[in-house]
Length: 184
Length: 310
Image (cartoon, chains in turn purple, cyan):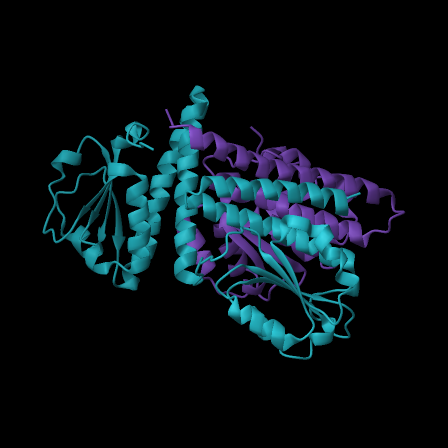
């Protein structure tokens, strides 16, 4: 089973002007989140610690940043960052409880306008792939076609698309199994 | 489907709800109803009680959900009971087991039930009983999916009313002429149920009003129409996405200057749209339709990779 730990950042993704960060603190999760396509998520920079992640955002003011963050850590982030960081462009919030989900949905703090989506953490796999496609596409559009990395990013994008296709495929398959299966 | 066998090991945990009925809202009752139906007989509801005889729960792990007032009145509460309370007085709230609203309290109940399933799934995974593990995992996911659907229903006001038999959304274009958009039908083929072209915003507006209860709509508006009141198109519940396309002097707005960009975002948004639609059909137990939708999503991913990542 692949998990967050299998995400290995590829430093080629340091060149483009958009960054993709994932803040994930192991201590907040007694059961690790499964990420079946973790090996494809090479565009993700992972952070364990809230402070390190905020520092990183502060140090990269010239980059446009997409951030995936847990609902509890998001509230901490919001609590100790005022004014808001302008380079933090898109925020995706994964929630570990339904209570947290409801609170996030009705939440109206300063970062409200930057929140792109709120979902339960078991959907993290799907949302990382889905947002990942858009991230890689943005990078590809930004880079000139004769840039050496262009082809590589295109290839990565293709693989992420196909992984997302697999996700849809397996959901479809599971439904065909379920209709014939009576659980025991 | 018979869940009673499946829930065998859960019978060790009981959830007691005491004296909450008078605090219930439609939203909370709806959530509770769903939880009860998905967990068979592990949730026990009592009302108008002065006290509770806990002796029959002693050998089981028990979670009690009640009002702060009732909890305070209990002096025979066994030590290993976990208590969650609804507090009228917000200043009394000191920890996470105390809630200000009934919705929060029922959400906590859901989270506790899911936590239980998840930890069982984790244990079964460790002992190699993968089948059981997967069933618990799916059960947990099903609870969250249903609750999220209920949450949407009570907060977003969507009426999932469909009069047409198609699952695909419609594409509507408001453009000065069809010329550079003629290719769109062939390009997206059956990913949309219909393609309609309008050259006049009033006709377009009327069409959308008249069809508000039918299909979901993806709407493309040429920047020539930007000056007119095209913003109010967004207010219709069936308009899912609006795209501005063409040249523009206004750079603030998200406007697609090239057809490639526009087509990319249409495809990309369709994937997200089909995923949500599939979830909805799946929680509605319309498995066959849900499966068709997911297969369409799969095709779209293939399509995206072929057209936009060379």
